[in-house]
Image (cartoon, rainbow, N blue to C red):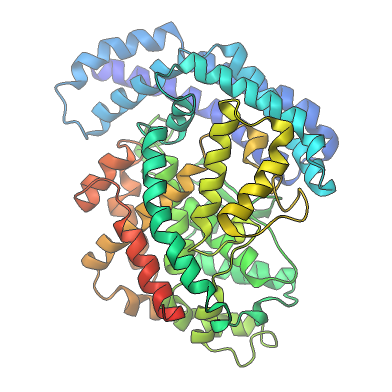
Length: 501
């Protein structure tokens, strides 16, 4: 068995390296590549992804997995070796259903669509992006047909990002949370002037925003000798190796929150990836359990740490040192209230914690409607604007602040958006457990000790890699499957106290 396991790991290492090479090209595409490089980059990515797919779906790998599957049954379910065989077999069986030609076509289409999205967003003209979105949509429908489904076409696409999760489950979860959130939004709306955040909307020099964000992620535990930060039109994190995990951010010259919290968010993702155990590197079980689990890490650091009262009791002097004029006379308490101001907004990534999930629910609804041919691509801006009014009571003035704001559809990642909300819910569930395990957590944060949280996450979440689904991990760490009670209680407690509702 050991000889075959070693052969499996060797084959997976080569497949992983091809994927990481694609990641380098993708990172460069969003950061430093000149606009003229788009066509060649599409060809390069298509080739690398096709080669990786062919390597992963080879008959030889299939025979190895068949031979090893019997042996895995005699090993503990959560052992590294049993998990490697089980997860690789799961991924292999799915990948075998997808023709290499389709993999290459999706890579080419998404690379072209990204270039088109950048230009369309800059011009605020959805019509320039529409044909590229239509192509991505057609290819994802084809992918769903290849993967197969019995109920909803969205199911196999969602499963790529959140293994085992079904569309109907997400709909039920969202309906339950929306029922709890909407009354809170309405109650807060009646006290809209209770929180003053005007001082956050003034000129903040970009270089200083950069420096403050770097200081925050260093405090979180992000290691710059194993990573770096760059600018991108839409913040993201990417991993080339466990010792090369990179983050990006973006800046708004007259709004403090945008860059600071984007940097903390991406830092949370990066800490997860830097926490991969070396022995899981270059295998199918290195990295995140799912995107919902990944988002639980980023949203926890961004919101439950970065938007906490305890954090700002420590960090406020550091922020004032960087921005003495802008933050003159601003106390840690005033900062805490300001960064937690609730106001329905146009932009998802700038949304407050109370309304954020409404943005996700809207996108989830529209993705299903597009895939099921209930909404045509050309009608999307009008439908988007109507849904924004329905969900949040605001109407985008243009396409750039509306339907074109997110990068995701340029990459064809239908099924990704729900994982942001699943991550929010799981983050709160984890945080309840963390508070039980570390009763003096707030006191530690007030002293600037964020390492205590990172150590807990490393021991309870990061160490497992991809060995478990979200529900399996939730049960292992908290004793129950994913639930939304913790999240709803967190919102009601935090914002009930801020707004006295």
